[in-house]
Each structure stands twice: as structure tokens, then as C-alpha cells.
Image (tube, rainbow, N blue to C red; front, side):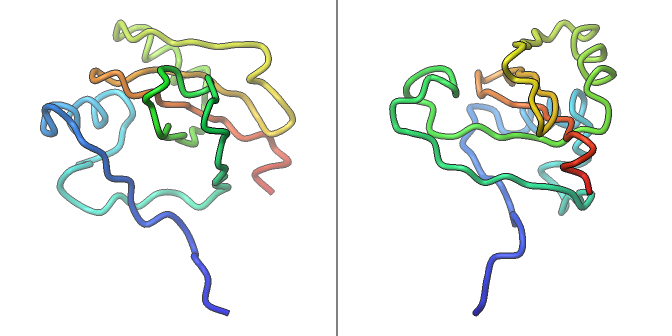
Length: 122
């Protein structure tokens, strides 16, 4: 049977696409996000639908949330905080699958950052 082999892209609307692409490149290290194909490292990807009434994404109108895998969550959080970006953490977000934090891009889109646990990386 033919099957999906990975995520091929993430497309979303923006009030200022160029400025938002620059923010993602500057603060998350996604090089040339709007110009070329981003070659990501192999690793775990979770695709999970949530209930329509979930509060996990933030505002009720939010239909999606991107989750980026990171190699050093503490280092990433320190850099984001140093740049004046609010970083949210919660004890319940740390689990057997890894550690998480949440930020928002300049247009208010939630972004979850995930450092997978050793068992998830195997």
C-alpha cells in the first residue's frame, strides 16, 4: 500500500509573510524559510488530531499548532528569552516523550518546541 513518508510542508497565512519568515529564521534557525526547501534532520514526528474544543492550542479559533523538534531545549529557551520572546513551560508538558515549551510568533501563532526523550530518539 502507498503511504505518507513525512511532512512535505507547512503552509499558513500571514499578515506580513516576509517579516514572519525573517522572524522564524532569526529566532528558530530555520534557514531561508520562504526561499528554499528546508532540509530537516531525521527524527520522530507526531501527527495527532485533538478534540475540536481543546484549549491546548490557545485561542478557540486556532485550528493548528506547529511543533518543532529541538536538540537543546534549555539553550533554545535561553536564546529566546534573551531576545525578549516569552517562553511558557508547564510541569505537565514534560513527560516520557520529552520536554516541551511554548512560544508565539509575532502574529500570535502558537509554536511548541519539543526536545524528544532518549527513548523517542531511538
